Image (cartoon, rainbow, N blue to C red; front, top):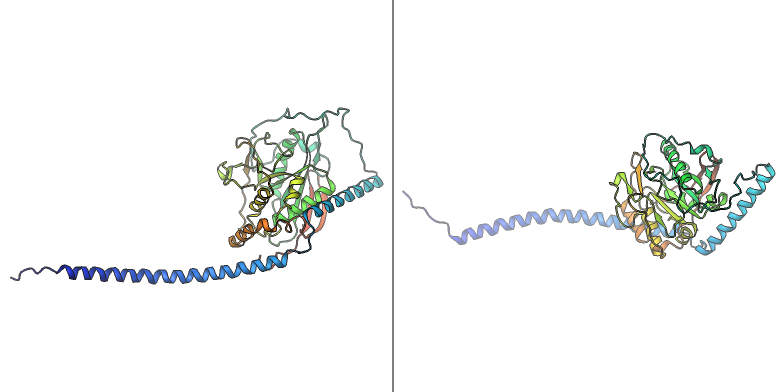
Length: 373
């Protein structure tokens, strides 16, 4: 019978080292392949971003007026448009004498007829009959007192007729209980090209001011229905993010700079930040961009309490987001473009202005997205 022979410790150590080296070599091969793929991907990404920077330089006009100059030009256009409107109505004999009562008292600071929380059904219209008191074109003002605030509500829109009908059925009664002098504007992008929500909101701000003299503007997503009429659509001292708590997001604010959904701003503040950037083609990031503009301009993002700033989102198919690398690049350069990318550089053609029973509709052609967008 042979005796057992022990393996020398040195040989065991050598075998262990060989196994470790083989394992490390396999790991290096795998990671080298991943590294090469990553480098190639990053190289392509950097090339695309360089192309984007070149496109930005070509897109942004070097001769746009300054923000102050453009503000004066806008005011002149508004005055001319209002004078033409008055002359046209006078020639047509359509100027109506106001049926306001003799009272010249301002409406109460706190409207007396607010309900508070509202039961919202996002699949049906509200049964409130507030639309019966609307003026043609979707405007209204209280008859027994002078409104403290004149508000233009702008709703960017495309292919959401059912959502728009539901929103208007809830929004008009709320604005009337808040005793506001207001008018609703729906702005629609012409054609089937990539949607540019920010650009058509800039257009609506410019065009709305020609037909309605407001002190502030509320930009309102078509799929958000307010759940509490104490969330005032009045003119804020600072930009006010109103849709703080949305059911789709668990009634929580996703992040501190968020201003998307429903945003109220005084006209002078919106002009100060030069409106929205015109470069966000596709879904996403235009709201973050204006948040940075607001903060960069020395303004403050204010918010109502979460318990009243509540909204229900009408269910819909989510749009495909634009390329995240392009969005990040645009956000990164956003404040540098503020002076020449916005209200003072928006290019568009107003195709029609139609007055409906409950809103004024703008149809605008903003062209095709540039190459690389």
